[in-house]
Length: 252
Image (cartoon, rainbow, N blue to C red; front, side, top):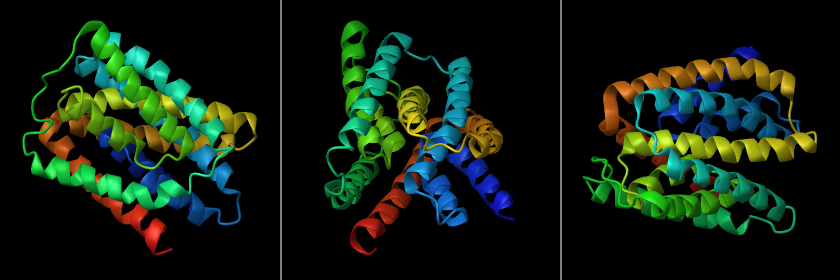
């Protein structure tokens, strides 16, 4: 029964993650519920090893249908990888506990801004071009990549929001670009978790099948229904993140 449970969780996580990120909201609690006595690092490492497959598939699917701005996104992905490695190294020296109470407040500000700006992310009008876009995108990749390695929750949502707000992408293009950047940060985390023996590869590879199926469904829905649909899912995921991180920070 537990295999059916975590398989369904992996499917749903892939679906949500492909649209706007936030699959960890589904997958991480499911793994902790199914394997309560396991070291948290092992479950977190296994989650990364599962989600990277769906994220990679979503990146490929989006790249076939959406005009990916590779000149800006590839340097940003490299910066995200480096940032995630640096963040993961930093967390071995400094506790991320101070972020627990700050995170729900930051997410609340993101949600309020998105709701207040009705036209935010409705039109794809990039603010920069050439090297300037690559530089700004790389700064985003480095900063959010560091956050992903150091703490993690909401990484996909932060990528989407900043790509919309700072670079001027619409929600569909931002979601597509965020998949590539998130894939890079996930790979960095997998390298570190794997070297320390904190990945259950046999479980990760089985769950990856369901995650990829969910990812294909989510990508199809996003491409079919467009920016308005992705914006609505973004609002739902950020709202769920606020509730989850707020409970962890103030009530647990």
